[in-house]
Image (tube, rainbow, N blue to C red; front, side, top):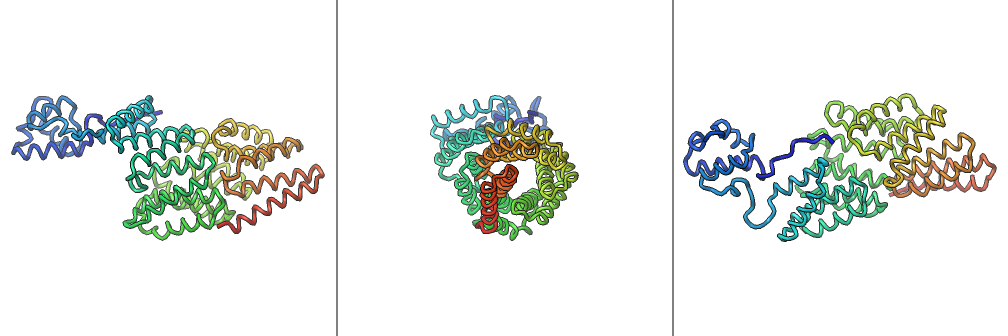
Length: 439
């Protein structure tokens, strides 16, 4: 992974260090020139005091001596036995950047925090371990870390640590417990709704909540959440908030089968993102639009968007997420009549998702079933339908299961088993009716 420059670890915050140096200097009535020394010119000190530069340890020690204060006081090291905030933030940044040895650094931080009895640092270290586990798709471990983090510091809220609640919801969803996922996200969303409303936070949590409701087929709740966001649209001054809201609207409408509205919001996302630098999100928007176009059998246009999505997402997203593109490429191959290619793509997606992403794996099995059916291999097609039906429920929108039952009905009709064909058709119709009436 490409590494960015990590912040200095011997101070808490460059701006705060500069402010403390200036205040100590002014309290003693000294000018920049009077406290300067070789290796620390007045112009350098001016940049330090503005927060643009950070003095190294030797320079900071000399400044502390000249200003008659302690090095720790200038560096922002707490004097109460707590772990300095800059040290915790540094370890968290190592986790975000995927630094080698980040997990060891977090373990060491957690051990030190426990010895000191610093519950806030304990909570943040546990949260960091949870983020590492989520990234590795160890969802049950992640849940345990996040829940322990909440218990360790009872002051934790969606306003102070939104990433914890967002990742906890994702972990519960990954573990197949969508009810708990929604409960966590709904509670965080309600917290963000209290006055004074933090609109960017509201949109961030609301979009995740709407997606979770959509995955459960609870479209009324998803639309209610999105309607709340729309009421605050005029207060959204940043592009990212608008993109998140429009993308959630597009996804909900796409899963409901309201393709015209879904396409409208997808294109709005594309328009906003093409004027920004959100490359990965732009890729996801192209992927969603490709899915909508494939549902309408506009294969050529869909493939153009899939190509762009792969180019934008490829360098940044994890392999399981790239499998979504692979599955959609397989759907396009079926529509072109290239069954062998569709089969190959479905198996490629399975190797990336079967162990960690059952929802995506279920759609890959459905694609394998369609390929086998087109080849006339009905027993294999029936088996893959069963595998898809086992994997998808509770992890993806109900219409995906409905489509599998519709395919199963075609299979049973092709082999002449009309009672089985009617039963599969009845189940598909039942899911369609549930979609229309879901709360």
